[in-house]
Image 1 (cartoon, rainbow, N blue to C red):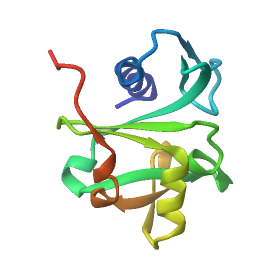
Image 2 (image 1 turned 90 degrees about the vertical axis):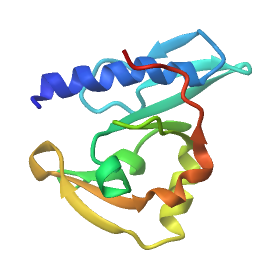
Image 3 (image 1 turned 90 degrees about the horizontal axis):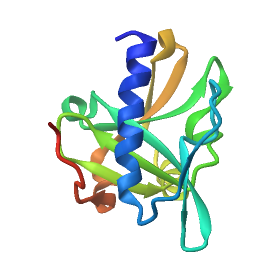
Length: 145
């Protein structure tokens, strides 16, 4: 998939992710290459920043893939300003809604395998078995057409 196609694919999941919050007041992050979050939603009298991931490989590998570095610089979970991750397992009905700090704690308290990939092999990821995310599984609020 080209970068442009990949971007459009991700944007569709960003739209779906807004459904996991009560409020309709949504602002998307500034349009720049490395964003500190994907969108924010106004809920309970405060802004909640959200990072959205749509993973095509989790269904086959059983791993949640969390980026922590790109081009040898901190990125992803290391630098995000998000309060939550919404993580879609493409090809299933599984969606996880997890606080960013909970992901950081899972990573801190465990030793996970890492790998390189994405962005022509410049990104580095933690490979976290799905069992660590099971308590964050949420009910699907959309239907694929």
